[in-house]
Image (cartoon, rainbow, N blue to C red; front, side, top):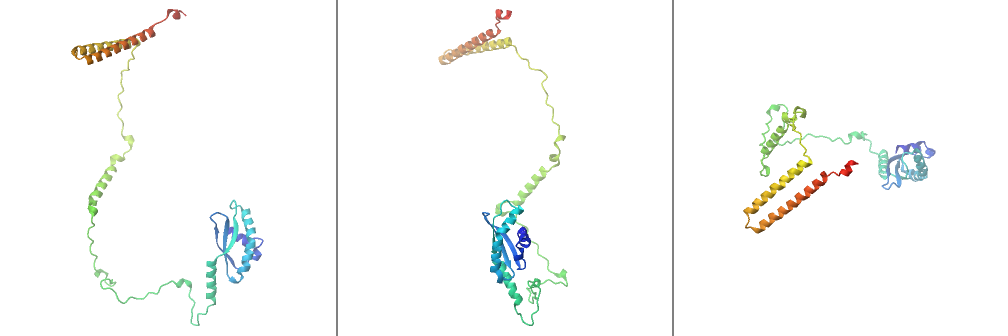
Length: 265
């Protein structure tokens, strides 16, 4: 709006505008950014048609001048629109200046028009009069009854006290101490290092395990000799364990075997 008024007042066509009492009230851009509405009004409505034709010719030049300022990327189409609301207010002010209010009329500043005139109230309601001479004799306010704390069957006082107690506990001194004051107890590390078994030791341990398992199966089979399905099951497990032992033994022998011809190379 400031750039528009500056161009209209100091531009090439300012001689056609200055002196006509033209005022720019507001500027509005359309929602689709297609046109720019410049609302104007004049002090007198007699030259509205002439002013409107002058502004219509000025719209194209005004758009070009705004684009030269590079305020925005693209300046929309400029349309001058007469502001009817402010124009009507200007007409009313002009009529009031010409109105004859009579010989006894005293002009008053508009600031005092809204001031209300106060009148003293003669009748007062009994008991509501405040004695300014003896303020100590005024009746004291009755104490209010205690507030109910059991609305909807809930003991609100008990609930509030419980919440306050919990809050005090959370704000205790020992809870606000810095964490570096507490030292973690060191964990005792095992002094003995684990012993890793060799291949032969693993082989011997596995053979002992299979032998112990075979003895336990045979012992269980003797105690349940009359129960054939269970005996067959133990016999199958015995065969599987013996096969597993044979496979493990063969694999161990292959790993420990050294070819003398390869060793000579």
